[in-house]
Image (cartoon, rainbow, N blue to C red; front, side, top):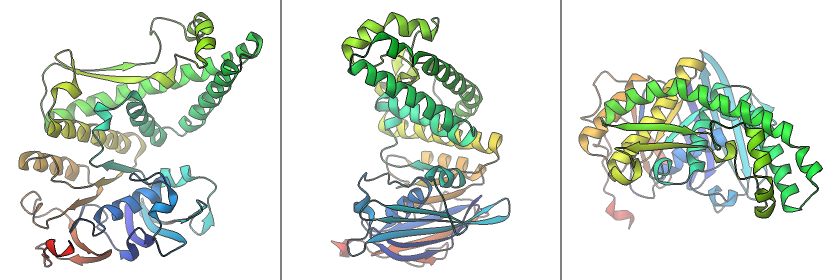
Length: 375
C-alpha cells in the first residue's frame, strides 16, 4: 500500500507539484528551511485526514493567491489502483472524491490512506494530557476495527446529551434516560481498548527494546473509572456531584495510558531525545499492528529526521522503518544526513525542494544547494 503518484496544487507554497514517490521504501526530501519540505508531508497528511498537523484554520493552508487547494493521489492497494482527491476552499468548504465519485465522509479517505506522523510535536504523547494518549489508542482502533467509529460516536453522543442535561439541571428522570446507552457504549469501548492494547504491548515492548532499552518500564491502562466498580454504579454514585459540576466526571472519555519508569513518570526521567525515540516506538508499534491484523501498511511521515536524535538513534529508527517495508517520507535540511544510514540495497528516492518546487535527484545527491541565500 502506498502513493504511486501525487499531484498538489496551491497547498501553502506548493503551487504546482507532481511527484512519483518510491512505493515501498524511502523518499528523502531535503531543502532549506521554508522551502516546502514539511508542506509536502502536510499535504499527504491532509489528503488522509482533511486537516493539517500545523494549523487548525483551513484558509492558512491555501496558497495566498488562490481560492482553493487540490490534492490528488493514486494509491496502490494489493496491486489495484485507487484515485483519491480532496479540494479545500478558503471558506472551509471541502470536496472529497474516490475514483472520481464524491465521498460523503473524510473517514473513508482516512481508512484508505493510513498515515503515521513523527514530527517535532510528537512528544505530546508523553508530556501532554491524557487526550493525546486516548487519540493514540483510538486512531489505531479506527483503522483496525470497522465498528469502532460507530461505537465511539454513540458514546460521544450519549455523553454530550447527559452533560447537557447536567448543565441545564434537567430532572433526574431525563438524566437517567441516557444511562443505558452511555453505559453500554462505555463498556464496549473500554473492552475494545483493552483488546487493542493486549495486541499492541508485545510489539511496543519489542520496538522500545530496539530503540532505547529501558529497565523497570511499566505501561498501565487507566479506563477512566475504578476498574473494580460497575460503570452504571459509578454514574449513580457521582450524580449529585456531576450536577454541581455540570459534566460527567468518569468514563472512557477520561481514559489514559500511565507510562512510568522506576515509579517515576517517563516524561520526567527521559531526555528529550529519549522521549522522541519512545514515541517513535509507540507509532511504529501501532503501524506494525495495523500490518499484522488488518493487512494495511501505513504511510510514515517523518519531519526533520535529525532533530534531537544522535547518529545511532537515527540509524536504529531507519532500520525499524526499513523492516516494515512501508512507504516512508523523511525530511531534512541536508541531503547527506541519511547516506550512511541506509543499506545500499534499500529502495529509495531523493527529492530536492526549493521555493515550493520539487525535483527528483539521484541517491548521491546531485543538488547540494546552500541554504543561507534564502535569508
